[in-house]
Amino acid sequence: MTIIGLEIHAQLKTQEKIFCGCPTNYRDMEANENICPICTGQPGSKPMALNKKALENVIKIALALQCELKRDIFIQRKHYFYPDLPSGYQRTSKPIGINGRLGNVRIREVHIEEDPGRYELRKGTVDYNRSGIPLIEIVTEPDIKTPEEARMFLEELNAILGYLDAGRDEPGSSRIDANLSIEGGTRVEVKNINSFKGVYTALMYEQVRQQNMLRRGAEVVRETRHFDEASGTTVGLRKKETEEDYRYFPDPDIPPVLITSELIEEVRKRIPELPRQKSDRFVSEYEIKADDAWILVSEIELANLFEFMSKSFKGREQAVASWIRGPLKKQLNYRNMTFKSSGLNKNDVVGLFGEFSTGSITDDGMEKALIEMLDKKASYVEVRLTLNLGKIQDSHELEEIVDEIIAKNPKPVEDYKNGNEKSLNFLVGQVVKETEGRADSKSVKEMIIKKIKR
Ligand SMILES: [Zn+2]
Image (tube, rainbow, N blue to C red; front, top):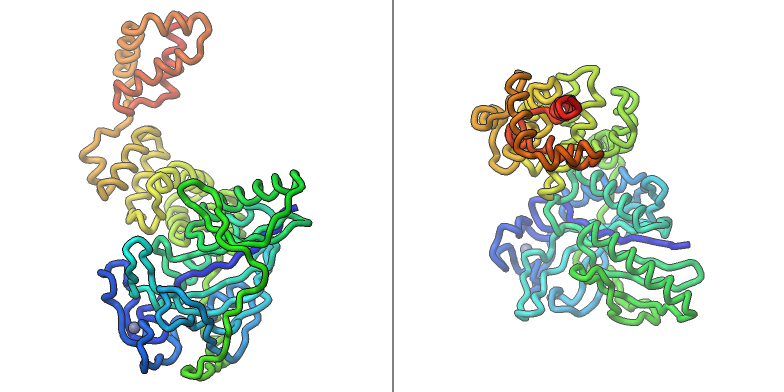
């Protein structure tokens, strides 16, 4: 049996850094623009009080993960030496939430800490824009049994951060350490993976590697490994005989912070309906399939789109759900987009789905329109005016094209007569192509079969 535990570091959504007033929009900035004596650890600089918004976000996440909250927060110094950490220590809190749960996975603890800078190994330079960005660290118990479960857990957690509006949604804003052991073996940790897909790949690789070692009778050593994204493999970094000694001690510059019951209650009120609850409600309220509902709630904007569309297509909610999960998600995933980042307008989507579901445009036409809306940021009205999408309704017009294609392709026609189904699909494809996707492939197929049999 495989045993997996995760440690997730996610950047919290705030305007300012954790212990200074520097802005957090470092992705738009030149290196070392968003810095001050505090976040570069200069001698004599004193941190400001813990960023209140960052703390509220941690409390919100801890509550959403059903954690028990600690009332006083102590900031500690964790010492280690690396060029991205100018002070020689990282400020990190004692646990703020403990004993939580998400699905079948227990949450051991959550706490807050500061992000270090970015060391450019090749250039030998450090960019401190990231130094002091507030992070939440979420540590699970080793309750996960497969790499696939780990991926699903991370996707749900990510959805929750989005629902709570508490995490930053830019790429690279989460980093994950994953540990894995095979029952009877030794725990190995893979550090600093920066995508969910990466976690899955790293764990799959590590699982097979350890299984093979145990099968050969070799010993899996306790170590920290690095995930190489390009090759999808993990490489040994250092053996871990004992726990590292970080010489933790309380930060004398930052007094403990007390969390009041009023603050907790105020934060609790701002927690919206979460993915699991929403998914259950979608199933009972709209009578859609549970696995479709689960896809819809994976992004709050997508869930909102579904409810928005449901108002216009009452009684056809399952068709709406299938369409979002199918053609829409396919085009979004292909572009690595969320519904939010796609910039699609909800009314445009209603217009497109409306014409598609009533048969005014074909599958191909709908897909073409969607691609145009995504790639050219065009509105549905613009797309409708510029592209010829209207389905061919006139059967005489379609018949002429079908006759033409049959006349032009005697070989596939002969092959189909001899029982080759692929040749039929080829002919259908040719007709659809000739009409630029305006012919409905089902009626074309029927028409060709009728004609060839004659
Ligand atoms: Zn600063």
